[in-house]
Amino acid sequence: MKGPDQAMNDRIEQEITINASLDRVWELVSEPGWWVPSTVVAPVDHAPGHQVVRESKKWGRFPIEVVRVEAKTYAAFRWASQAPGADLTPRNTTLVEFRVEPAGDAVRVIVVESGFAALDAPADVRDEAWKSNTDGWQEEMATLAARAEAA
Image 1 (tube, one colour):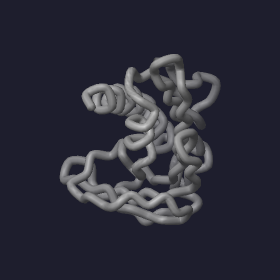
Image 2 (image 1 turned 90 degrees about the vertical axis):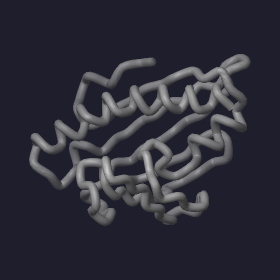
Image 3 (image 1 turned 90 degrees about the horizontal axis):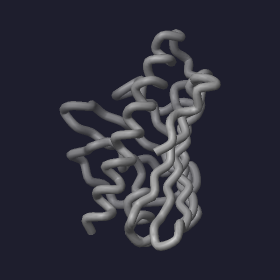
């Protein structure tokens, strides 16, 4: 896995190669909010602007909005990781993008989360969100690989 972009605290980029089929990886990656453990199950809808709510007692409530989905290659969502329970606004969300591409017999998944510097929050809250999500994406990408490879 590649580490975060250290140049500025506005963007996180990580990648992982998964030994599973493109169809299986895409099924998991394209589910809005898959990275937020949830007791709420919603049907998958890729329509731009569609929102789902991922919720658990441990992590709280997180609306996730579909930005754009291009079958089996790209999925983008918005969420407000630093503001559990808040409705989404242009000033409290970051953009989460997944790129999926074949890598031999495996699949490469690249996640980029950006927009931390533009969050309408104090600098310490923005920095903590960036740090927390940098660690979080390492865990979530490993979980994604385990789920895909177990299929």
